[in-house]
Every structure is written in structure tokens, then in C-alpha cells.
Length: 93
Image (cartoon, rainbow, N blue to C red; front, top):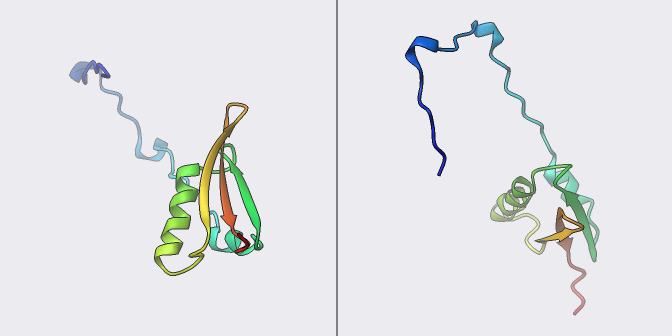
């Protein structure tokens, strides 16, 4: 449980509107990235490159729209680093 100290009314931190940091969003073109994964291949993403939760959610979102239906994602931790593997199965089994 996080213990909060509360807001001290006598010591409020008020800044100019212009000092508020701008929002920053990085666009990742998942549709174009997934198109590049050939049959029987897997894309490896590390947590240093992208949010693994966001990448997996992007695949699920595209699959709900009827795209990349046969793709699957799995996570592994290798040497303490988390990776997401997005697999385009070959269909041979």
C-alpha cells in the first residue's frame, strides 16, 4: 500500500501554463511491421524497443478487425530481459 502525504495547501507547486510538458506519443506502424513477417518466421521485440503490452494489444486489435488471424504472440524472459515473439506460423505441423 502506498502511503500518501496529501496536498499541503500552504505549499502548492504552481507553474505557468507554458511550463507544462507537452504530451509525447510515438507512432509504431504495427500493420506494416506485421506484413513483413514471412510464413514460418517470428518477429522479436524487446522491452527496450516498445511496450510489450502495447505491441501484443496492437496484434489483438488487428485480429479483431479480421487481419493477421493466424499470427500468435508469446513472451519469454532471456537473461533477465523480456521479449515478445510475434509468430506467423508456416502451417506445417
